[in-house]
Length: 458
Image 1: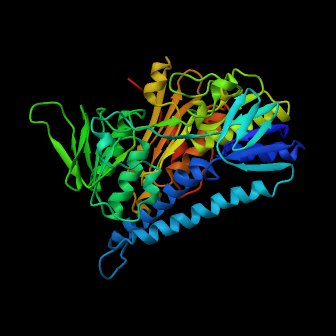
Image 2 (image 1 turned 120 degrees about the horizontal axis):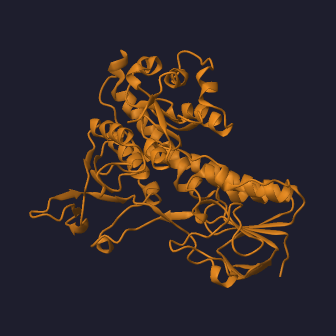
Image 3 (image 1 turned 90 degrees about the vertical axis):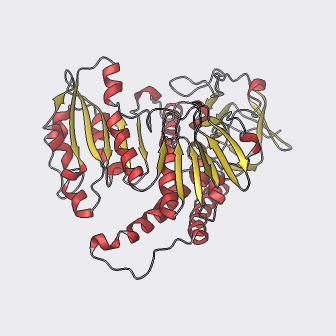
């Protein structure tokens, strides 16, 4: 039974960096991967979807060429086989790079196979039996399949199986009006599909403030996407070569009929078949591994990083998990998950960059709130680019002058929001950013202006 100083299960965003850091510190490290190196982000998350978004954006801009005084002869077409091939090449480069980097690292042994606990510090990978005093779980998550009546009798797609699609669906039905569903919806509408998004809630992206949700709704509807809200008693059935979906329980229940179905209603952790009971590692009722503020499980010497711990569902939160654990374990640090600021993006076009609290969340927390806001129609850079959809919004604590949050929905919103996020991380008052001189013409230059126009929320 090979003995190691550390075992890492999974090669998502946190795992390889944890392995490299430990190996560089002179530890003997084993890392196990059961399928694709690089995890969700590289194989069926960020990397492939944003590559597809880029192709969809190119098609969209080509169709708008006349708006910029550019002439294109003939109709703009989309060759999905070439679109997919481009995506596959980029994914293969990223995934292959992770694998090669691990295999070529001194003090590192790579195991390919499904890792399962035999005891608290003993792991089996195929026929191999490994022991180590430190084990890091980085197994990620997968799409949830909701208990929709009839779902077991119809073909459906998830964010993972969408990566195999090399055609334009005639009519794509999407269950789920949140981040994944909206990105795929706009993407495939731009590729040429008819798209219907079905959401049970009264509005899209429920976690956002209502004005942001409405703005995103209007952007997608403006591109010809049909959006069905308040959809209750959803059920599906096969109807010839199509899929029929009931979306209401009222008399004369309306139906939608589409050619393909995408489920985008959330994700679940890959913790079912790790043998966690044998290790004594606790999970919550949703299957997420329970961790403390330093990402340690209830078993000493075992940590859980990334999507499987329920403390973040993004590549950047997974990487930050690695940073926290590495700093505390190797650098004598005292970093905590609770110290980080919520930050993420919705990669529709235009993208939504988000940091910190929404207005609703700040008010619920008992804050006296000030808000500054501008539509993108008032942003010179957006006008010049011909991309005036969206808004900018910053939330401030009236008492402490701390920035509580920001939403930038517009061109470069996913980048511009970082100037707000960095000031929040520095715990500086909003006046520091308000008095900064930003470059013209940019989207970010409106941030100081907005902070000079703060108003109380009724």
